[in-house]
Image (cartoon, rainbow, N blue to C red; front, side, top):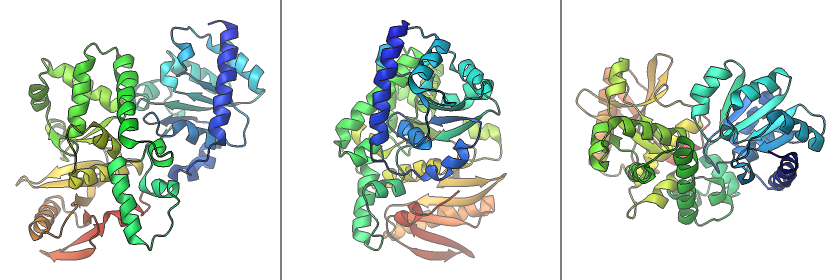
Length: 422
């Protein structure tokens, strides 16, 4: 890459950085840990889907500091071969002598791990952002073992959403529930929440961009139409169970191996999550049908083949994403559970080596049959797993039900979302 072009890109990106820095921003829940993170010499790796606010969050971590900045997702870099150490020299010439560095969308740089490692050894305090969850697992674990700090930034949680809406009148429940309904339907991507973007149009384009940039292009997928159909099918079946065989039959995949690979790509790009059923036996966990969730409820509205009005499914997906935002790792600390009689509990929370909490999600428990069904599932699972912390999350119903010597707490979703957990 020509030195003149590097200078042009750095100058252009510095203007973009300044524009981002001047924006009004919503203070993220994780920002409270910022000073502690920045005082550490560990490489900060900020991960999450595109447009979730990773860059702005990283800029806020560096507020008041002089730092080098470069975005590896710049269109001007396509097809160009970067001399990375020449790049660092040019960045210093532009920004001055500093050891703080922010590199955006680092997954676009081939061999980034070795480059980051070398800068880290030279005493640089690095923040890297990436839109691929694989950075957390394989690449980071292999090359930056013990030298990195992963930070996940997902679309706004409900508390951040309310901050963005300047809402603080928590005693005005009708308005609070109206905002919760909006959040549950259109999700928490910052530009949807703060800029009044048309949710369906914006999110439809964003979904296609995630699919193309972080799946098709990154993994050189040959059958892009097939993976698009897979993504759309899963989004339209959010909160439902799936098995590889059933998916392969429905979508006419000739190979289970290809299907499994495509599912992994969608998960790496933060488009979907798969949740396993809890079992004390690891083999049974792997063999059990998975439940599908998406990173943001807005994708459900934008990709729905027909009008999606299943509030129960939307509410369950919202609860799942909230657990992930609170730091619970799916399939390690967070599961669903099926009793021996086939009754399903939506979420089983693991603490250490044991399940410590069981949670059902039910939009409308005014129906006596629905209440009895949810309570019966929890009681049955409670007996099998020896767990007494039992909760049904509802839209706006709060009480306790006692049965078989156990207490099941019914709690409104809004109240649970406003709690600080983990």
